[in-house]
Length: 185
Image (cartoon, rainbow, N blue to C red; front, side):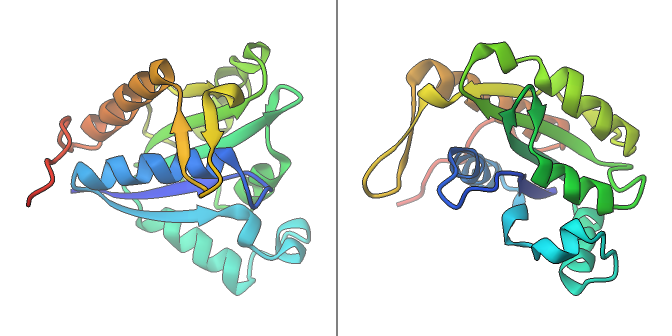
């Protein structure tokens, strides 16, 4: 199966975007893929903002991109664009860091007015980085994502079904199964 890098561009430690990505990660794992997570907010700010290409953390993140067959890019939408934190990382990656990769763009936001940000802000950047196949992205309203006191994410039923289809289509594009493995007892 494929190796997938799941990237959260949210600056928040309690991010619904990151929680949604971890939900996706579990489903992709159940499809048989090997998934690793990268929360951009954990990278050193001085390396990101100072464009320190040689910083060990930036070099490690670059290597994660190079080793992945597929990349899930998740970001909150701020002012009709993907996060500045995500942009700071994308700017430090090699020009064709996504060459040969299948990419799934995901976004969360407070209003449907931001739904086109995936296609008009994020997709062109991913394409310019050489992504071989950018599957249709998905925008989820913040109001469809609820975090319980225990930190567990609950997704509104309509969004949950749509998100399952998005993950399954991404998995199929990676050459994976389109059905989830049943738990064995």
